[in-house]
Image 1 (cartoon, helix red, strand yellow):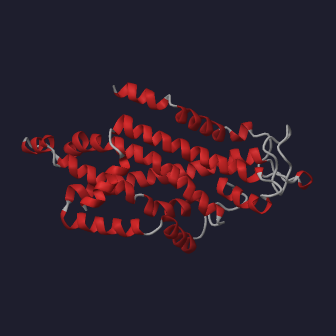
Image 2: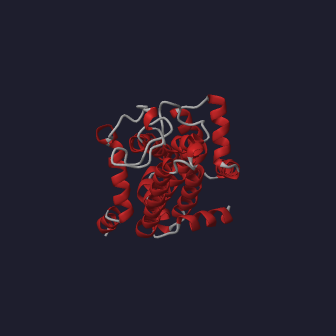
Image 3: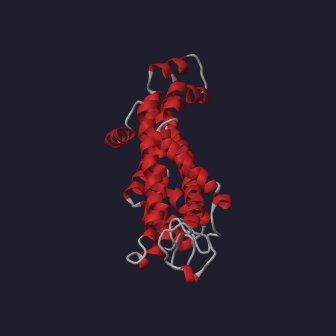
Length: 283
């Protein structure tokens, strides 16, 4: 059954589209028609043509090449941030559920505080102190990105720990690690995986917003957010300059969201958003 579910997810249209995007961005150094940073002012702001399939930007750089290379940075930062938030959120959520008491209460209050503040505001504060850069972007977003995952894991782990299976394992002397590995982690794995997919799309947009504001990736490195910012002053004359990176962000975020919803229904069997709402009401 699990194998059939996995096949259903991997063979879905969103998964195929995401795979194609990942392959294209990984292969960018070999399939890009031009050097993404090569300037040609004589060819600036050209419309899409056979020579430049997506046109050129204000410096005459090939838009298709820049989209492919920019996707490497956008997707890698979003992936690293998502994995970081997944690991931290899962660890803290499990620790809070297992330990309980004052530690659980402290976790809930800190979690509430971070959830009350917009993620982009905290990210802007951290970047303003530490300066822009790859590691700073990951850290600034990762500081607050773990909170929804941690709350979800804490709520579901508390439910799993209160079941008869766990009580029976405790009576026969099972260790805490055995209980977590065999009873808690399998219970939370599906919904957490689904939420990680949903969070990836949100973090991709957030990281693109930081780059759009000019405090994310710095020249000569580019990503989809910085490409949007560079193309905005020429949007009327050259709308395709904003269309390509904007469409890339939308397509990846949309497909990841669809894939997350599919994982929610196929693997988890629970609505992640509904589970979070119940956790907040319970707390």
